[in-house]
Image (cartoon, rainbow, N blue to C red):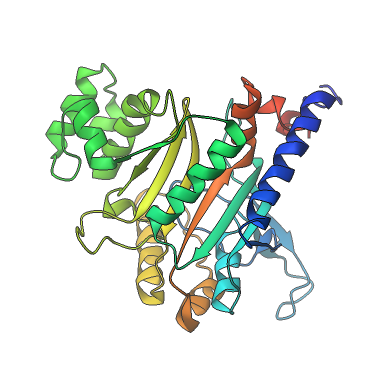
Length: 325
């Protein structure tokens, strides 16, 4: 094991310049930088995300002999929305985020995330602003936009909003990617997500960043459902040169609907043999108080810097990856 950093001094200077460029981008737009806790009493319920946990003995309402679980944030989203509900204006944050996932070429369990929220924006407004940031930092071509539905039809010849299980399995079989766990998995979204990530994703955003929007409503997460077509959610992602960079929402502001989604997540966790996660009740209370109409987005800073520096591995743009931490 080496004690030395994997980030060279030359790349450290370039990383610093990009971080400064990001801050200047928001300063010019009067979007205010904030800082929120990395630890929380509640966490995400998403079946595809796992939070890292720690123990704390000194909460006001517990005995110092009893350790309570605290969760490292998978993103600063819940805390930032609580700020918005309390009356803050447009805000951004460059924060550490933590996810209990295997390290790899594009992922370290501790990473840097840029997240920002724009009052009065819908997801189209925010996609345009994200595009401006990407063009400024990466000096890339103008990003393109395509719906999730159009992308599936163009790439694999099926409509993801109407396709049945047999049609989706046929796509996977045609690509020689069939496996027993896929055939036995009863979740429709699992097949859609597998096709998207394994078959479609490698072919999008090659020459310029590509925004994919209007994901199925079953994959809405924290986004509004589209009024014009309730089969889709007002959510987008952005891909460039094989890297997923961005995940954004026209934010759901209804506390009851959000709570129901969290409960549904936990039911799915139970069905999959996973542990239920504690719902962030402070976040739900903030929504109940009133979250203004807004759109928000999270961007992986380390991945952005990888693209800017043409780095092959995330270790080249962070000082100490998990193996050397």
